[in-house]
Amino acid sequence: MDRSQPGPPARWFSALILVILGTLLSSSLPARTAEEPPLTVPLIKLEYPGNPPNIRMLYVNILRLGNRKINQPILLDTGSSGMTIDCTAVLPVKLCSSKGIKITKNLELDGITVTIEKTVMNYGTYDEYGNVAFARVAFGSPGSPASTEASIPFLIRYKTVRRSTGEIVGGRLWPKGIFGISPIGGGGPNQMFKSPMDAVSAGNGLRKGYYLSPIGTNWRACTNEDANCPTVEALHIGIPDSVKSGFKTQKWKTADKRYNFPTIGSCILLKEKTTCRPTLYDTGNSTIVIADHPPKDLGGSTDVGTKVAVKIAMLGEWKFDTSYGSELEFSPTIGHNIVGIRYFERNSLLVDLEAKEIGVRIGN
Image (cartoon, rainbow, N blue to C red; front, side, top):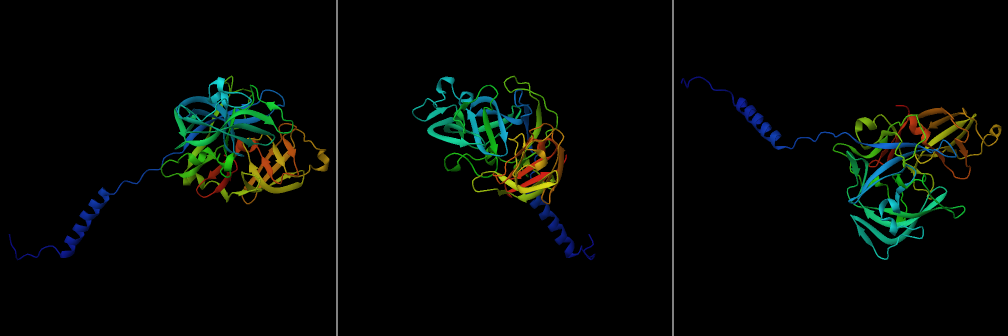
Protein backbone atom coordinates (compact mmCIF):
# COMPACT_ATOMS: atom_id res chain seq x y z
CA MET A 1 0.00 0.00 0.00
CA ASP A 2 1.40 3.38 -1.01
CA ARG A 3 1.26 5.37 2.21
CA SER A 4 2.38 8.46 0.35
CA GLN A 5 -1.17 8.90 -1.08
CA PRO A 6 -3.34 11.29 0.93
CA GLY A 7 -6.17 9.69 2.97
CA PRO A 8 -9.79 10.87 3.05
CA PRO A 9 -10.36 14.25 4.69
CA ALA A 10 -11.26 14.39 8.40
CA ARG A 11 -14.71 15.79 7.67
CA TRP A 12 -15.56 12.57 5.81
CA PHE A 13 -15.04 10.59 9.04
CA SER A 14 -17.13 13.12 11.00
CA ALA A 15 -20.03 12.76 8.57
CA LEU A 16 -19.83 8.98 8.76
CA ILE A 17 -19.96 9.06 12.56
CA LEU A 18 -23.02 11.38 12.48
CA VAL A 19 -24.85 9.00 10.13
CA ILE A 20 -24.12 6.02 12.38
CA LEU A 21 -25.23 7.90 15.49
CA GLY A 22 -28.42 9.07 13.79
CA THR A 23 -29.26 5.52 12.76
CA LEU A 24 -28.70 4.22 16.28
CA LEU A 25 -30.79 6.98 17.84
CA SER A 26 -33.70 6.59 15.43
CA SER A 27 -33.82 2.84 15.99
CA SER A 28 -33.90 3.31 19.77
CA LEU A 29 -36.78 5.83 19.77
CA PRO A 30 -40.34 4.47 19.93
CA ALA A 31 -42.26 4.76 16.68
CA ARG A 32 -44.87 7.51 16.60
CA THR A 33 -48.27 6.05 17.42
CA ALA A 34 -50.56 6.14 14.43
CA GLU A 35 -53.85 8.00 14.79
CA GLU A 36 -56.69 5.60 15.47
CA PRO A 37 -60.10 6.07 13.86
CA PRO A 38 -62.92 7.25 16.14
CA LEU A 39 -65.03 4.53 17.74
CA THR A 40 -68.42 4.59 16.03
CA VAL A 41 -71.47 3.76 18.14
CA PRO A 42 -74.77 2.85 16.45
CA LEU A 43 -77.84 4.79 17.56
CA ILE A 44 -81.44 3.64 17.38
CA LYS A 45 -83.93 5.89 15.53
CA LEU A 46 -87.34 5.64 17.12
CA GLU A 47 -90.59 7.35 16.22
CA TYR A 48 -93.18 7.00 18.95
CA PRO A 49 -96.06 4.93 17.49
CA GLY A 50 -98.88 6.44 19.56
CA ASN A 51 -100.36 9.86 20.26
CA PRO A 52 -99.17 12.54 19.99
CA PRO A 53 -97.55 11.59 16.67
CA ASN A 54 -94.14 12.65 15.37
CA ILE A 55 -92.30 12.18 18.67
CA ARG A 56 -88.85 11.22 17.42
CA MET A 57 -85.89 10.20 19.53
CA LEU A 58 -82.45 8.63 19.48
CA TYR A 59 -81.53 5.74 21.74
CA VAL A 60 -78.24 4.08 22.63
CA ASN A 61 -78.00 0.46 23.74
CA ILE A 62 -76.54 -0.24 27.19
CA LEU A 63 -74.76 -3.58 26.83
CA ARG A 64 -73.38 -4.21 30.31
CA LEU A 65 -73.17 -2.69 33.75
CA GLY A 66 -70.18 -4.12 35.56
CA ASN A 67 -70.17 -7.78 34.52
CA ARG A 68 -73.94 -7.96 34.19
CA LYS A 69 -75.41 -8.17 30.70
CA ILE A 70 -78.11 -5.53 30.27
CA ASN A 71 -78.92 -5.05 26.55
CA GLN A 72 -81.31 -2.15 27.24
CA PRO A 73 -81.77 0.87 24.93
CA ILE A 74 -82.10 4.20 26.75
CA LEU A 75 -82.65 7.72 25.46
CA LEU A 76 -79.59 9.58 24.16
CA ASP A 77 -79.82 13.14 25.49
CA THR A 78 -77.38 15.93 24.70
CA GLY A 79 -79.48 18.20 26.93
CA SER A 80 -78.79 16.50 30.27
CA SER A 81 -75.88 15.09 32.26
CA GLY A 82 -75.71 11.64 33.80
CA MET A 83 -77.18 8.21 33.24
CA THR A 84 -80.37 6.73 34.65
CA ILE A 85 -81.75 3.25 34.02
CA ASP A 86 -84.88 1.44 35.13
CA CYS A 87 -84.56 -0.92 38.09
CA THR A 88 -86.05 -3.89 36.25
CA ALA A 89 -83.40 -3.59 33.52
CA VAL A 90 -80.61 -3.92 36.09
CA LEU A 91 -81.78 -5.82 39.15
CA PRO A 92 -83.90 -8.90 39.81
CA VAL A 93 -87.56 -7.90 39.49
CA LYS A 94 -88.27 -8.92 43.12
CA LEU A 95 -86.05 -6.00 44.27
CA CYS A 96 -87.94 -3.37 42.26
CA SER A 97 -90.98 -1.45 43.47
CA SER A 98 -92.46 2.00 42.88
CA LYS A 99 -91.94 2.54 46.62
CA GLY A 100 -88.21 1.95 46.34
CA ILE A 101 -85.51 -0.63 45.74
CA LYS A 102 -85.91 -3.38 48.32
CA ILE A 103 -82.49 -3.32 49.93
CA THR A 104 -81.51 -2.42 53.48
CA LYS A 105 -77.76 -2.21 52.90
CA ASN A 106 -75.44 -1.65 49.96
CA LEU A 107 -75.71 -4.45 47.41
CA GLU A 108 -72.84 -5.86 45.31
CA LEU A 109 -74.08 -7.63 42.19
CA ASP A 110 -71.92 -8.67 39.21
CA GLY A 111 -69.64 -5.66 39.50
CA ILE A 112 -72.49 -3.25 40.29
CA THR A 113 -72.69 -1.45 43.61
CA VAL A 114 -76.23 -0.39 44.50
CA THR A 115 -76.27 1.92 47.51
CA ILE A 116 -79.08 2.75 49.89
CA GLU A 117 -78.64 6.47 49.09
CA LYS A 118 -81.75 7.77 47.35
CA THR A 119 -81.90 10.80 45.08
CA VAL A 120 -84.04 12.49 42.42
CA MET A 121 -83.12 13.50 38.87
CA ASN A 122 -85.07 16.42 37.39
CA TYR A 123 -86.02 16.68 33.72
CA GLY A 124 -88.30 18.97 31.73
CA THR A 125 -91.73 17.91 33.02
CA TYR A 126 -90.98 14.94 35.25
CA ASP A 127 -88.67 13.63 37.97
CA GLU A 128 -86.96 10.25 38.30
CA TYR A 129 -86.56 8.71 41.75
CA GLY A 130 -83.88 6.14 42.40
CA ASN A 131 -80.77 4.94 44.22
CA VAL A 132 -77.17 5.91 43.59
CA ALA A 133 -75.21 3.06 42.00
CA PHE A 134 -71.70 2.53 40.61
CA ALA A 135 -70.42 0.33 37.76
CA ARG A 136 -68.43 0.34 34.58
CA VAL A 137 -70.74 1.01 31.66
CA ALA A 138 -70.43 -0.62 28.22
CA PHE A 139 -72.67 0.65 25.43
CA GLY A 140 -73.13 0.60 21.67
CA SER A 141 -72.39 -2.39 19.47
CA PRO A 142 -71.61 -5.87 20.87
CA GLY A 143 -68.89 -6.25 18.26
CA SER A 144 -67.20 -2.94 19.06
CA PRO A 145 -68.42 -1.63 22.41
CA ALA A 146 -67.52 1.66 24.03
CA SER A 147 -66.78 1.47 27.73
CA THR A 148 -66.00 3.73 30.65
CA GLU A 149 -62.48 3.30 31.98
CA ALA A 150 -63.71 2.83 35.54
CA SER A 151 -66.91 2.61 37.57
CA ILE A 152 -69.08 5.72 37.31
CA PRO A 153 -72.05 6.84 39.42
CA PHE A 154 -75.51 6.59 37.90
CA LEU A 155 -79.14 6.35 39.01
CA ILE A 156 -81.12 3.11 39.18
CA ARG A 157 -84.63 4.49 39.07
CA TYR A 158 -87.65 2.91 40.71
CA LYS A 159 -90.31 5.41 39.63
CA THR A 160 -90.92 8.34 37.29
CA VAL A 161 -93.28 11.08 38.45
CA ARG A 162 -95.02 13.77 36.40
CA ARG A 163 -94.08 16.89 38.29
CA SER A 164 -97.26 18.87 37.65
CA THR A 165 -99.65 16.21 38.95
CA GLY A 166 -97.57 13.82 41.06
CA GLU A 167 -98.73 11.00 38.78
CA ILE A 168 -96.41 7.99 38.48
CA VAL A 169 -95.87 7.37 34.78
CA GLY A 170 -94.24 4.62 32.78
CA GLY A 171 -95.38 1.75 30.70
CA ARG A 172 -94.21 -0.09 27.64
CA LEU A 173 -93.23 2.90 25.51
CA TRP A 174 -91.74 5.10 28.22
CA PRO A 175 -87.92 5.42 27.90
CA LYS A 176 -86.22 2.95 30.23
CA GLY A 177 -83.57 5.49 31.16
CA ILE A 178 -81.53 8.49 30.05
CA PHE A 179 -78.00 8.58 28.65
CA GLY A 180 -77.23 12.24 29.33
CA ILE A 181 -74.06 13.28 27.51
CA SER A 182 -74.12 17.01 28.20
CA PRO A 183 -70.48 17.88 28.93
CA ILE A 184 -71.14 20.27 31.80
CA GLY A 185 -72.89 20.10 35.12
CA GLY A 186 -74.41 16.99 36.58
CA GLY A 187 -77.31 15.61 38.55
CA GLY A 188 -77.86 13.90 41.86
CA PRO A 189 -75.99 14.58 45.12
CA ASN A 190 -73.32 17.23 44.57
CA GLN A 191 -73.86 16.87 40.78
CA MET A 192 -72.13 13.49 40.93
CA PHE A 193 -73.94 12.08 37.87
CA LYS A 194 -71.77 13.41 35.04
CA SER A 195 -71.75 12.62 31.34
CA PRO A 196 -70.60 9.01 30.83
CA MET A 197 -68.46 10.37 27.99
CA ASP A 198 -66.17 11.97 30.55
CA ALA A 199 -65.05 8.47 31.53
CA VAL A 200 -64.53 7.09 28.00
CA SER A 201 -61.00 7.46 26.66
CA ALA A 202 -60.29 8.58 23.12
CA GLY A 203 -58.13 6.51 20.80
CA ASN A 204 -54.48 7.28 20.11
CA GLY A 205 -53.94 10.65 18.46
CA LEU A 206 -57.56 11.74 19.01
CA ARG A 207 -58.99 14.60 21.05
CA LYS A 208 -61.19 13.55 23.95
CA GLY A 209 -64.81 14.11 23.03
CA TYR A 210 -67.40 13.04 20.51
CA TYR A 211 -69.40 14.15 17.52
CA LEU A 212 -72.74 13.26 16.00
CA SER A 213 -72.98 12.92 12.23
CA PRO A 214 -76.32 13.38 10.39
CA ILE A 215 -78.91 10.72 11.21
CA GLY A 216 -81.02 11.14 8.06
CA THR A 217 -84.59 12.29 7.48
CA ASN A 218 -86.36 8.92 7.17
CA TRP A 219 -88.34 7.79 10.23
CA ARG A 220 -90.79 5.01 10.87
CA ALA A 221 -92.94 4.12 13.85
CA CYS A 222 -91.30 1.37 15.90
CA THR A 223 -90.53 0.30 19.46
CA ASN A 224 -87.49 -0.91 21.32
CA GLU A 225 -89.63 -3.67 22.83
CA ASP A 226 -90.34 -5.08 19.36
CA ALA A 227 -86.70 -4.55 18.29
CA ASN A 228 -87.90 -3.25 14.92
CA CYS A 229 -86.23 0.17 14.90
CA PRO A 230 -83.48 1.10 12.41
CA THR A 231 -79.98 2.00 13.55
CA VAL A 232 -77.60 4.61 12.22
CA GLU A 233 -73.86 4.86 12.88
CA ALA A 234 -73.93 8.44 14.05
CA LEU A 235 -72.13 8.76 17.41
CA HIS A 236 -68.33 8.92 17.08
CA ILE A 237 -66.08 8.88 20.15
CA GLY A 238 -62.67 10.53 19.80
CA ILE A 239 -62.10 13.52 17.52
CA PRO A 240 -59.39 13.62 14.83
CA ASP A 241 -58.00 17.09 14.17
CA SER A 242 -58.98 16.64 10.52
CA VAL A 243 -62.62 16.21 11.57
CA LYS A 244 -62.64 19.12 14.00
CA SER A 245 -61.28 21.45 11.34
CA GLY A 246 -64.51 20.92 9.40
CA PHE A 247 -66.61 22.35 12.27
CA LYS A 248 -67.13 25.92 13.37
CA THR A 249 -66.53 25.93 17.12
CA GLN A 250 -67.16 28.13 20.16
CA LYS A 251 -66.42 27.84 23.86
CA TRP A 252 -69.53 26.43 25.43
CA LYS A 253 -71.58 28.50 27.84
CA THR A 254 -74.52 27.93 30.17
CA ALA A 255 -77.76 29.77 29.59
CA ASP A 256 -78.29 30.20 33.32
CA LYS A 257 -76.75 28.86 36.53
CA ARG A 258 -79.93 26.81 37.01
CA TYR A 259 -79.11 24.68 33.99
CA ASN A 260 -76.48 22.02 33.40
CA PHE A 261 -76.34 21.95 29.63
CA PRO A 262 -74.15 23.83 27.14
CA THR A 263 -75.44 26.50 24.78
CA ILE A 264 -74.16 28.53 21.87
CA GLY A 265 -75.69 31.75 20.59
CA SER A 266 -78.29 31.22 17.85
CA CYS A 267 -81.10 33.18 16.28
CA ILE A 268 -84.38 31.61 15.14
CA LEU A 269 -86.10 33.44 12.31
CA LEU A 270 -89.85 32.92 11.94
CA LYS A 271 -92.16 35.07 9.82
CA GLU A 272 -89.72 38.00 9.89
CA LYS A 273 -89.45 37.80 13.67
CA THR A 274 -86.00 36.98 15.02
CA THR A 275 -85.36 35.54 18.48
CA CYS A 276 -81.69 35.45 19.49
CA ARG A 277 -80.92 33.50 22.64
CA PRO A 278 -78.43 31.03 24.07
CA THR A 279 -79.47 27.81 22.34
CA LEU A 280 -79.40 24.16 23.38
CA TYR A 281 -78.96 21.56 20.62
CA ASP A 282 -80.93 18.73 22.13
CA THR A 283 -81.33 15.15 20.89
CA GLY A 284 -83.81 14.58 23.71
CA ASN A 285 -86.35 17.05 22.30
CA SER A 286 -88.61 16.45 19.28
CA THR A 287 -89.56 20.10 18.82
CA ILE A 288 -88.08 23.56 18.28
CA VAL A 289 -88.71 25.73 21.35
CA ILE A 290 -88.51 29.49 20.81
CA ALA A 291 -87.96 31.59 23.93
CA ASP A 292 -90.44 34.24 22.84
CA HIS A 293 -94.11 34.87 22.21
CA PRO A 294 -95.42 33.58 18.86
CA PRO A 295 -95.90 36.06 16.02
CA LYS A 296 -99.38 37.54 16.15
CA ASP A 297 -100.41 36.08 12.78
CA LEU A 298 -99.68 32.53 13.98
CA GLY A 299 -102.34 32.52 16.64
CA GLY A 300 -100.22 30.28 18.88
CA SER A 301 -99.86 27.39 16.43
CA THR A 302 -98.01 26.60 13.24
CA ASP A 303 -99.09 24.86 10.09
CA VAL A 304 -97.26 22.09 8.31
CA GLY A 305 -94.76 23.69 5.96
CA THR A 306 -94.12 26.79 8.07
CA LYS A 307 -90.69 28.06 7.06
CA VAL A 308 -88.10 28.40 9.81
CA ALA A 309 -84.47 29.49 9.73
CA VAL A 310 -81.96 28.92 12.52
CA LYS A 311 -78.93 31.16 12.30
CA ILE A 312 -76.01 30.25 14.52
CA ALA A 313 -73.92 33.30 15.29
CA MET A 314 -70.88 33.38 12.99
CA LEU A 315 -71.31 29.66 12.32
CA GLY A 316 -73.87 29.27 9.57
CA GLU A 317 -77.58 29.09 8.82
CA TRP A 318 -79.92 26.09 8.68
CA LYS A 319 -83.38 26.28 7.12
CA PHE A 320 -86.25 23.83 7.20
CA ASP A 321 -90.02 23.57 6.79
CA THR A 322 -92.06 22.23 9.68
CA SER A 323 -93.38 18.71 9.09
CA TYR A 324 -96.20 18.68 11.63
CA GLY A 325 -98.37 21.29 13.31
CA SER A 326 -96.92 21.33 16.81
CA GLU A 327 -93.27 21.13 15.83
CA LEU A 328 -92.69 24.71 16.99
CA GLU A 329 -93.33 25.64 20.59
CA PHE A 330 -93.12 29.04 22.29
CA SER A 331 -91.93 29.59 25.86
CA PRO A 332 -90.99 33.21 26.60
CA THR A 333 -90.02 32.48 30.21
CA ILE A 334 -87.25 29.89 29.83
CA GLY A 335 -84.61 32.31 28.49
CA HIS A 336 -83.05 29.95 25.94
CA ASN A 337 -84.01 28.42 22.61
CA ILE A 338 -84.05 24.65 22.12
CA VAL A 339 -83.30 23.08 18.75
CA GLY A 340 -84.38 19.46 18.80
CA ILE A 341 -83.98 16.33 16.76
CA ARG A 342 -84.66 17.93 13.36
CA TYR A 343 -81.26 19.62 13.48
CA PHE A 344 -79.50 16.27 13.73
CA GLU A 345 -81.19 14.87 10.62
CA ARG A 346 -78.95 16.83 8.23
CA ASN A 347 -76.36 18.54 10.43
CA SER A 348 -73.60 17.62 12.88
CA LEU A 349 -72.65 18.51 16.44
CA LEU A 350 -69.20 18.20 18.04
CA VAL A 351 -68.19 18.35 21.72
CA ASP A 352 -64.47 18.76 22.45
CA LEU A 353 -64.02 17.86 26.12
CA GLU A 354 -60.38 19.03 26.16
CA ALA A 355 -60.93 22.50 24.72
CA LYS A 356 -64.43 22.87 26.25
CA GLU A 357 -65.83 23.75 22.86
CA ILE A 358 -68.98 22.96 20.92
CA GLY A 359 -68.89 22.77 17.15
CA VAL A 360 -71.61 22.73 14.50
CA ARG A 361 -71.41 21.71 10.89
CA ILE A 362 -74.28 22.62 8.59
CA GLY A 363 -75.01 19.88 6.05
CA ASN A 364 -73.10 16.67 5.47
